[in-house]
Length: 405
Image (cartoon, rainbow, N blue to C red):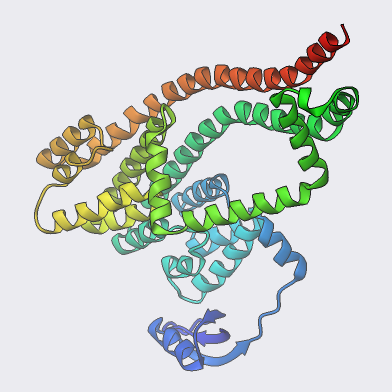
């Protein structure tokens, strides 16, 4: 439930805003914790615009949106602009409606005396726990400006890396989409007319198996398309349900790491994400066990999440982090050795920076190799599909010609 409040702080200044709480007592307790003296407190009935709800459903906050927001916020803070004023400026400038709405509410919270990290916790669907914890560490250590700069750098690098990978997949994805659309068009409009001729001129017994299969596909596509759609939707829902389970997610994550070429690409992506995030955390003054818990939430792969869980236990018992990493087959030997050196010399942050730089360069080379492999693979698949269609049409023609002679 939401409660609108008016209050005064210790300096006697007016403060107002909206707060989330289970009941009125809970709202009053939260305001007292912020050292605010309540003058009025009333429940707010949530009224949402239908258009805004539809826009919010379809609009998401992308990495690009977050990267731009963080960079602008870090610039404003470094220019000695007060936090509330900086957030107000950005809430008016942000183009994404979901992020703009969230920032407007965050401004209200911060104006009312709430810490930025506490306000961000209300929007965990927009800001990761890693992001929120880093902001909290900046507030605690008095290094918020520095932490925001690090976060802005990281988001920009993540967005740049993501753009490279997506850009590499655009061409093969486009070719595959065109192939599928072409196949559907052939099944629905071209093949029925050509195959009807064979069934009229010759007996079905004389029709080759390939042609019979094409006839079967055209009948299914034209007469039972709704069954195909329902079956595909059911299959997608079943697969998604399985992938949301612990075993399903583990299976998919392991499969990603074992695919030729792409598996190595995914491995490097996860290593970069780990090294870059963990380095930022260490710079923020967070301890290694606590930092590993935060990093776990941003890795995005259950194989590495389990590795981090095991590492946390070992580190808390006094063992080096590199020892646990050395036992995992998905961690390159070079990474283990570099981490061991970083732990021994007390320069773990520098080592993590070098790991990030090295694998960022490696990813560029892997993307080029993947593109060179994908293009001929697409041509082979396209050739097989075309050959199958041609064989299904030409073979009956030879049979009919020989029967006529």
